[in-house]
Amino acid sequence: MAETREAASSNGTMQPAPATRRRMVEWLGVLALVLGAAALFVTNNDFSRHYHSDESNKARFTAELVQDFKHPLLLLQASRLVNALVQAEDRQAITRIGRSVSAAAASGLVLLMYLLARPRLGIAAGFAVAAGVALSPIIVIHAHYFKEDLLLTLFCYLSLLALARFLAEPTRRTALLLGVATGLALSSHYKSLILAFVYVLALVLVAPRPARAYVRLGLQAAAAAAVLFLIVNYPLLWDPASFLKGFFFEGEHALSGHDLRISPMAHLFSFHLANSLIPGMTLPLALAAVAASLWAALNLRRLDTAERILLLFIATAYFVVELSPTKPFPDFQRYVIPVVPGLIYFFVKLLSRIAAGQPERKKLILGVGALMLLAYPGYVTLNLLYALDRDTREAVQAYVENNPGAYVFEWYTRPGPGTVRDISAVAPDAYRSEHGFYVASSFMYGRYLAGLGMPDQPPAVYAKAGRYARLFSGFECVEIRPRFRSFAFSNPVLRIIDLRRPTEQASGCEVRVHGGAQE
Image (cartoon, rainbow, N blue to C red; front, side, top):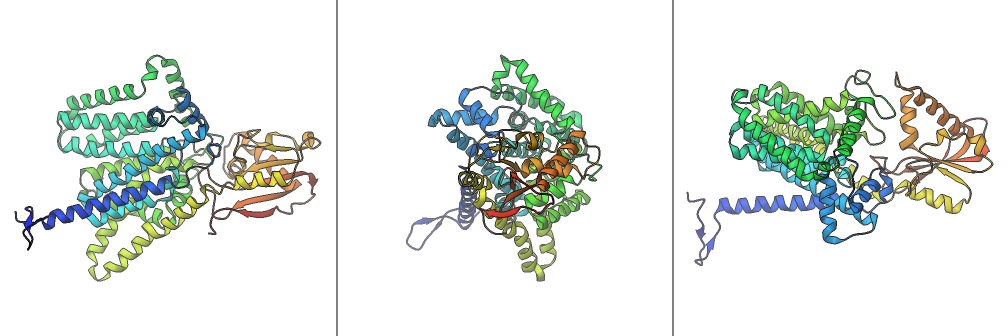
């Protein structure tokens, strides 16, 4: 009682009680963390919109108030609302607005993870979870793209927390909260439909009451979600054909693959672990976080309702994208972004449990944990951020200016649109008299060369890989590499092939390094 009252100081003025002061300090710290994360998420976000294959389309959709419904419209509608206030006309400026919306969603995710972790793990661990999310390379870099991934992740986690509240206290208020959160998630990306599966599993495996106790209120939540989805996506009401076309395009795409067909069994359900989580979170943190989540799964009785739901979501989100043969190069990493905050949460939870049981080694345990959670991922993130606006495609422009001639560019080779989708489709003998150079990007040729080592690919994959290999070995070339690494849609390895200078044996390319900080 005394702690909750204001205490009088020696000069008679009223001072906040210790509990109030601690609370103020805590929330000032939270505010500083979220604002710091927001600053990180918008740093260097003015790189060319042509670096990411989808951003120019989204800028056009935002400016012209049109859409193809291949994604729900929440990101576009939010960007249009901001643009209505600032009246940007330049497509690059509109792209920055869309990227800023993604950054705002990522900042909201940092706050939400603190709100999830704080009551369960304590203040210090809550800050660790939030800071781990804020410094995670896969989250920071994708917060710089005019894409739906961070909106999807934010509202999926909001829906999970709302579901936990609803299961604990099934009332109209909690049902409405669940419906609103779910409607926002559905409006951010069609992938959010996995929430329906998670909800069913939660009713069967986690709910403290029989499933039938939630049916009536659950229907009200579903109705609220549907209404909100229609409010956000209202253009579908007068153009349902375009909506259905876009929706089914994405569904068919998920089942049919993208260039390569990557089987889950061929990789033993570890493709995204090896190629998305490890580079996106860093090797030590990714492996430790997966191990921590497995530990949590083996200790379900020690988890509360929200944690069990979170574990169900992580497993569902991961295995759904593993089951799909669609793992589109170059940036299939974005498919596992919704998994990452939950993995970080369980890593911090396990670390807290170990430290609590080993008081004499607590400092060492926490030090190693901080190194894996913050220091090394932060190092990677800062290097990737530094390189965002020092892209290897800038070096191609400089090379072209210094070496005049006729060039054939493929996608992902320069700040503007490529001339052809991939240069493997262009026969060099037929064009040697007209074109002196081909420019190839690892974001194109990398997928086909990777396909050489995978069984049961479409014949075109092997044929294109062979044509790329002959081009690379048959002519002199210059290879431009990033100083740090290629990541998502940033800094591909580029090869400038000189068709005027055939060679009879593979002598390798002249390697030039561009941009970024040395790894």
